[in-house]
Length: 114
Length: 112
Image 1 (cartoon, rainbow over the protein chains, first blue to last red):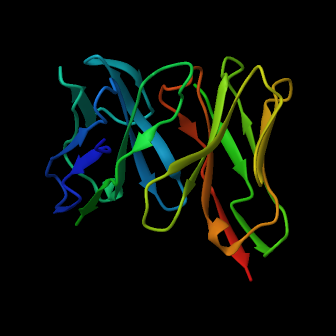
Image 2 (image 1 turned 90 degrees about the vertical axis):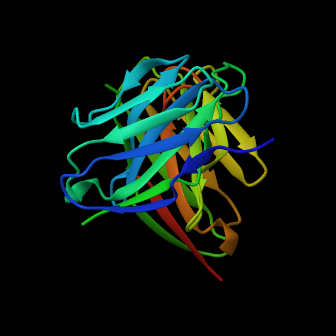
Image 3 (image 1 turned 60 degrees about the vertical axis):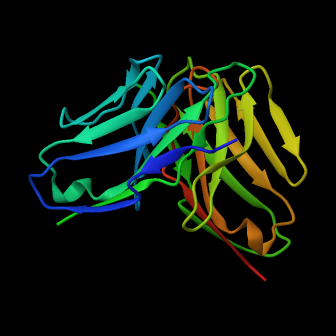
């Protein structure tokens, strides 16, 4: 069974640009959540999608947005990039079952903003 | 919203010693408390989790305890080995399988 796939793995942007990151969950997983990882701040929750609906949202500015498609693939977009947006962006998928709570993470997309 | 505090931020132990990492959470409705291990350059992976109806859970050298009244939960690693060196994250959510609120992580270093 293929794991969670994130693309692109690495990207470099300049301030003011926008970026779109993609996440393909494990087959059969309908829940996808996104996290920003930076040194010292750990894993900060961005948003969660289930069946194409945003179920939960973290405390990030409106420049950060996301969506989920009917095949459960998800994208996140960051507009008007700032230097502080440089981070590893991780997505995770899960079955959303009370019996199996595990989130399966992708390898992440490392964004560098210059 | 939920807030998870994790201590210590760094922990150094000798091989064979025990390591304890502690977390507190703020949302009394949280019912699911997993721990993830992230080795350098790799993705986080679940090592153990506990639900609110259980006070303690063990898996070989790893154990987790939960005190719902005090909103505390802890990870205990016994007989530490160099391969236990990693960053450990505690987390909380209202329901297993949904998005998690993580602590800031503990960097554990086990020296031989």
